[in-house]
Image 1 (cartoon, rainbow, N blue to C red):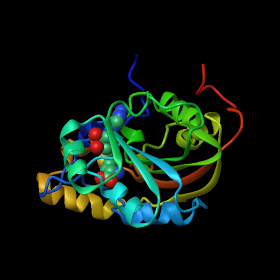
Image 2: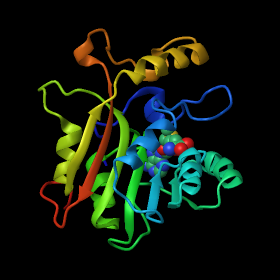
Image 3: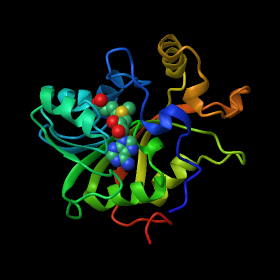
Image 4: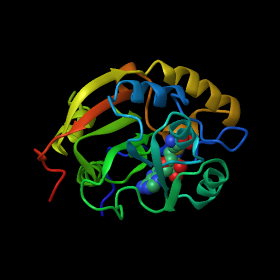
Length: 223
Ligand SMILES: C[S@@+](CC[C@H](N)C(=O)[O-])C[C@H]1O[C@@H](n2cnc3c(N)ncnc32)[C@H](O)[C@@H]1O
């Protein structure tokens, strides 16, 4: 597989951005998960797969608020931490290739994991497959503006077969995130992997997106 230019470079893209306590540094913190669910229209008890569940902070939030969470992560060390704090089913694996039947979930939650995947379209296509028609994609993540001004993230979400219900640019939270990053790592260099962020139109964005799984995909995310 060739590397996807939409995936995130640097430490963020490797999923290795940790704070002093070993928790992932997450641009939106747990607050973003609450906002996503408030806008989701999901009923209590909804079955939600947290792709890239990390140490289980979002899963713990789901449990506290009456949703039925399942977590997958490619990192066994963080899964062990998650197992010590949540009751939800957890499994080790690639969030872009999931051992679930078609249309068996109410929602996929991806908080800062899609940007770490080598093939964004393939991951979105897989999430479309496992979410039921009318179910939700809940996304909070960073992405880079493209040179031609197109919104690749939105395009890929729609091409995969999701209708966007809510979309918000929350890039302001990145300012606090990079401050915490510098405090922990000493500089910003490892974060962006050498990309030039000197002008505002080249800087990464952080976005919140809620989408509904449509009956049919429209684009190239599916073979
Ligand atoms: C910022 S953390 C997510 C934090 C998590 N939402 C929480 O509540 O603590 C991103 C996670 O995505 C995981 N990840 C990245 N790429 C992945 C992939 N292809 N499959 C599964 N997990 C992946 C990383 O290992 C990391 O744990």
